[in-house]
View 1 (tube, helix red, strand yellow):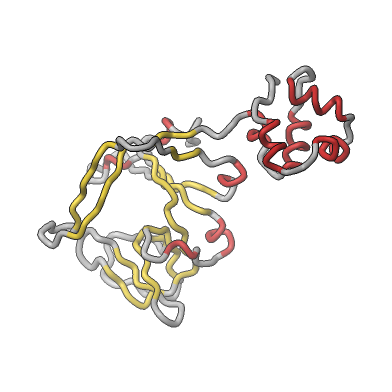
View 2: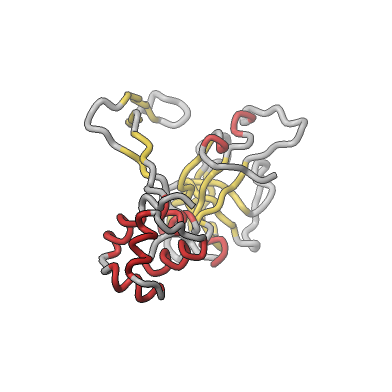
Length: 228
């Protein structure tokens, strides 16, 4: 492998001494120094062992996080004359001090999963434009059947309990729904979807709910690949 360009920085951020890291790894301090400089090529096993010692992801040893610049802002204001969302948008390019969004390391992304938007060959509805887009979510609430604390007043994927009776709903065909979530007393929730009729349901019991962390309209520009 090439020189691990971020290795020394991760060692510094860990607050550990190099001699202690070498001792835990079971190598001489000279070997650690040669791993840092690239004089001795690091194997994948080495990277995983060092990462465990340093409390980081293996790729963090080789590559620093990449910053994506903030290129613009979208400011939202209440506007009761706007019929759909009662919101006016002011969109501006950012001209101030440079700001960045840093890519998530695997240590953080390991908790994430995606919902992929798909459609059949005959679909020609107005949401065709979101086909193959993905919503990034925290998968832990799905696996553990609980309500994520960040779903309140946020777009979230929700599992409505099987004993909740859906009446007159032609949009949602399963008990997994997408909605803005509002908490009520007694562990019940109001689910709101701004589009269409019958767009708010109260007193809903949820098995789990997880917020949308990010949406990628063209995921292959961000992710290396998308299976299926």
